[in-house]
Length: 592
Ligand SMILES: Cc1cc2nc3c(=O)[nH]c(=O)nc-3n(C[C@H](O)[C@H](O)[C@H](O)COP(=O)(O)OP(=O)(O)OC[C@H]3O[C@@H](n4cnc5c(N)ncnc54)[C@H](O)[C@@H]3O)c2cc1C
Image (cartoon, rainbow, N blue to C red; front, side):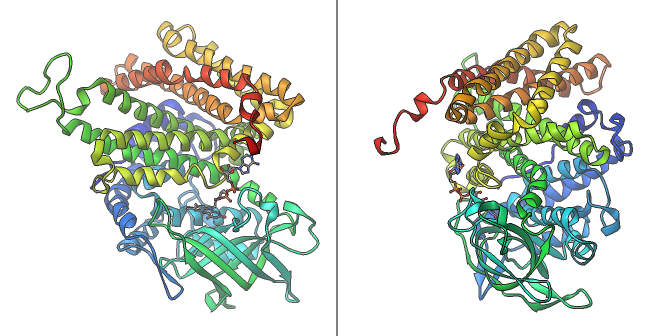
């Protein structure tokens, strides 16, 4: 059975030595000293490793069951949910006036990583609720906030997001779910939503569905879409759950992974809904939630990979096969452990260098979100919006790849369910698809984000990389091993952006055919930048005589691996991008 230990030391390294959070000037960050974050991460790590992780395989094998309209979650989920509830974990970064602890989003992100690594499917019940609370806090009336947020924050009630319909996923303009205005100001919601995560379950006394639907008079396409609150149980005058609303789970989807999370077909048969935000502005309301929602999925990419990696590493140390080519390393045993073999080491280094780079990237993005919310910093908001499709698309692709690598370390045993390696692969796969499939993230990046506000945010990113290189190039070791490769990769990124700006204007297909490569090129540059920042921090710690030199030396070696072996992928991505649309579009639809 797989195990998980929260990497609190790595998290602390990013928070304090790379991001130097207490000196960031962001309101609320000064209180996040090492002692405080240690206590939070230690407690969260215990929940993740002792309560959530042991249920991961249980959720996978048992799955959820629909019985007479009620969805039963796997054995042990209820007790674990109670523990998360009692710990107040859902309210960690939510406003104090609704019962939360008001901590920065960055803290919630670090804790979220541990919980997802422990049990991704389980954490989605809470994660979706957190997202729904965000929508109500941003767009709800004072009455709506008071009625729903405290109960959802405490996890007595949970939340969902209902966008997808059978014929409409990416293209929400095709939506058919209808909202008819009623005399009392409410709406009658009719239609069917599919693939709704946590749509029905037995963990909470009420479920608050946020539903996109078309109300009359809004026009065609996405313009006519509005957002509605549709509670499973309508609230009585005293605010307690009362009459059952006309919304029900019609079917549970059979799926590849995250079996512990219920994925539901939801039927709305004239259900009572309440408009949230402005009429016909539902898409805009959803968009304001997008950075956090997509960061949360990008986090799933590396968090699941972390759990897979830990188990692959343990296996590589334990499993005896073959002898090291340079001489026996385990003379008392019949063979050497797998970890002596260079290809296994390559495999483990690919996983480790991705995961640690992605953690730093994700925390940095979370810090930018705090900076934009707590300081009203528009430059931070612009920068993080630019990077979010990269963070989501690149990290979930690479997270899946890392999980496959972890499975490969197990050989045939990785294909057998008993080791748990297969579950990580299956669970990681969905993060590449939901919350905007990765092809659509690439489209968003190239079609919208790089040119947004006259390309100001893309320029800000390039300037930031340049400034970091300039500031540190006096350090010869850092320059040769980290800054020079980063400069080359960043030039590839700029050349690709320039190609899109010129060729894309003449033929949009020339840009879109290279959009996926661009997302990966950009992702490598972001992780390259993070590794350069981590290397600088590790060097500083070593120069200051840090007690745990091995930890920092390992950081430097892992970073060097990334810069030498992974970052050069940018030149391949650029070469592909520069071929434009022709090779991709050469065959017409009928010629395939
Ligand atoms: C387990 C699970 C949980 C989910 N949870 C939820 C949830 O809680 N709430 C919810 O509302 N939805 C949820 N979804 C739905 C999910 O968000 C959609 O499946 C996803 O957005 C893609 O939509 P689709 O499946 O209709 O694919 P399509 O939109 O049909 O896309 C198919 C493929 O075509 C590509 N594509 C589409 N349009 C373009 C384009 N213009 N250019 C280039 N490529 C394009 C896509 O990238 C994709 O690869 C969930 C799905 C699953 C499987």
